[in-house]
Length: 330
Image (cartoon, rainbow, N blue to C red; front, side, top):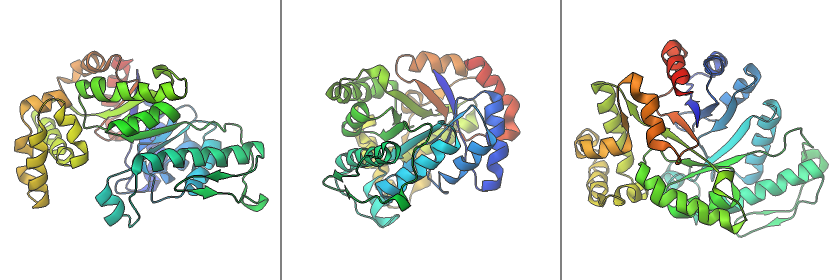
């Protein structure tokens, strides 16, 4: 099991030092996310200032970008990082796609599947000088003149991870991708009963094995009361989203999602954490003393996840703490 790190960089100029520190500590991959900031620019800086650690997005939102735009970004980062870049994509949810990004929401699983195939058609064109002729329901790509063709690179087989919660995207990951980002709002039972069976179903379509797809996730960890309540509040936010009801329904807790959704609709954010019982909290998060965390993670996720990331963002100022955790984990 690999141990990765999530880095949030409100200032791009902070990324070189953070990336160097993460690599020195021994993390296996740096993940950036599309929340308050753009996820690709920090990785360009990280590629320049590191040599070993993998670099990926967990996640970049797919649909506001075209396949060609994403293909160019990934191609350049793969070249700059000498093959260390992982393109991690997510669909987001309908409200954010339509109201935050201002683009169309339509058949997310088939559309993301087609986007992956379209990008690979572009990469094949650039690497092998094949004719670009991708025709699908959502994307039609038939024009690539030499002026816009970046040409071949040394590491053209760019890994693609996608994120999801429900069975359809799990199957797309199994069919086409090198990895699947399990949503941080998950439980071991949900991974075992929903994610893994559907990843395997997708893999069977293309003659692949479960071992061909890495399962990765950010995980909630709390080592004291303050962290525990912060995690409870974050879980209440995720658990209020209708798309994520699947996780709660594996335990018969679907009504919690409905109650949280009603509170969120009225802006009652402060009232939401109290609906996350200790039972829910302990299923979703690792609650343990600091010294017990590595063993608890391995116990919970053995055979389920191939790589984990702490949900709490990394800070170089806490390097001794992170170094101790990584050393104990490995």
